[in-house]
Image 1: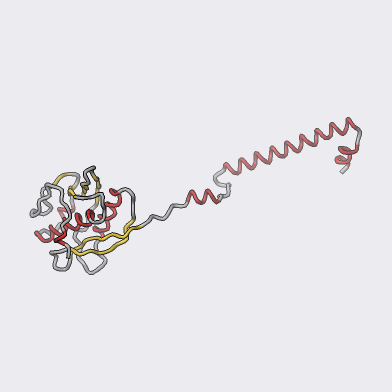
Image 2: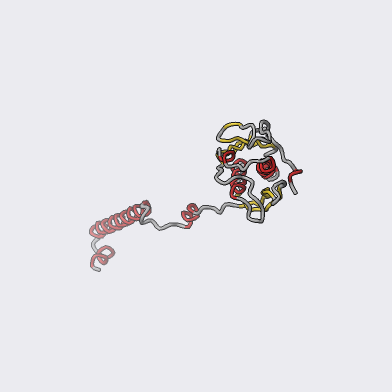
Length: 202
């Protein structure tokens, strides 16, 4: 209290000196506090998360889109569609891979799977002329049950599910383990890309 009294009511020279000391002390205190706050804010452990930090760290929900997947009917000769919500991507290759993975997962209704279990989608590439090159693991041949009917439903469940859901795909070329294959199980030629077969759909 005497210190503050002397600052404002003491001798002129004494007042000026004490004012300087008081102001310097305030500046030092402010500088120290600022340094501490900067240190705390730069520390990942002690820094409180701001609202914007929280927004940046939140992963946006992935949108989904309804598609029609084509599985075999009980007779094993024709295909029928099953509607499914699939994670959507603006990249048609990524979207195509999601559709294929859903086909491999199998139907949820009273239908029959068309792609053998154990098959993996290695890659999907869409060319400028709208042909999707679908590279599946070797299991698509090794685990296939065989027979012309089963071969047709496997091929066109893939072709129809891609071409009828993705406008950027007009035809599909099937590969196995990164290589071209002549047939899947000895009956249907796969030498050329295939378009949708609407006659297979019931």
